[in-house]
Image 1: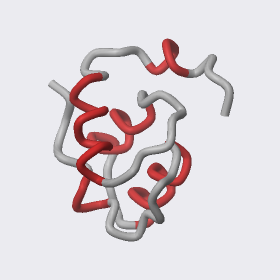
Image 2: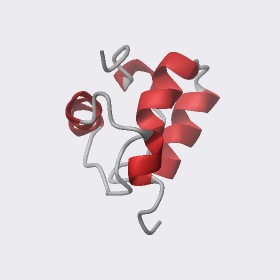
Image 3: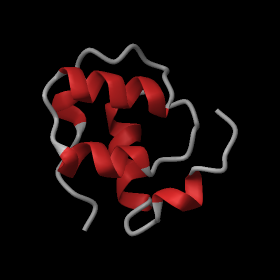
Image 4: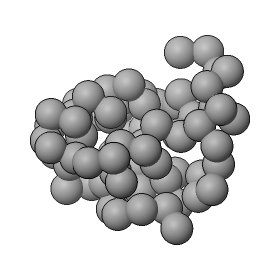
Length: 73
């Protein structure tokens, strides 16, 4: 399972933005590990909006953080 929908925690994100900004915004909004963990597995792409983030989280379901950790920031 991909975890809970991260969009409620991403209201302060300034889109388009990358994974690091998503993680900052979600953490600042009080997201727990169940939200931050899946966000951390996302590829280091730019995301246009919360719907795109949610789609990417669902697409990465089950991906190891180590699979994306090697990507350039």
